[in-house]
Length: 206
Image (cartoon, rainbow, N blue to C red):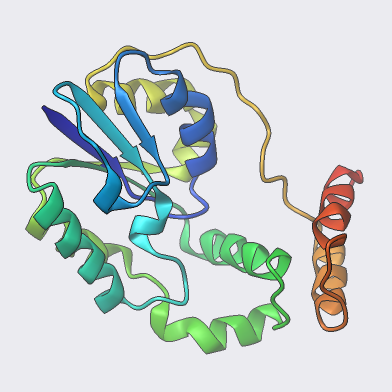
């Protein structure tokens, strides 16, 4: 039995990998965004993907280490896949997600509030390597620039052939002006039409 866990980070092409690559791999037990305690492993290859396992910005390193300890207890021989992204762009992408989820702070205030919880890549990797022997690290920028090679390398790490996949554009970002408008709107309005407004803004050429 083999267990591979894709743990994130958020905003590093996780949706593309989950929906357009991992779901297309045949003959594996693919588990997406499920409770760790409910996962049923099979004798073959088990691929678990949940970016929440690396936790998002409001969480500190001790919180993240607790998740790693739990993973080590549940899946002691697991192989880990993790993606990173250039720090400044990653922070701005996290802020984007914060705003469209209802956040009201400016980017500067957002960083000020969460600066102690910004993930330290090197420190986090140190904690990962203390617990797991086999770790595949990909860079979001390389995934975009050389997608075929990165996917080929990820699939080799999993131990499967590269599946037939299509690149579907998801999580399209808003322009700065659109994002500022949504942030302003968050101060006054939250309702059932809010996400429809976001979708319409995403379809507006920028």
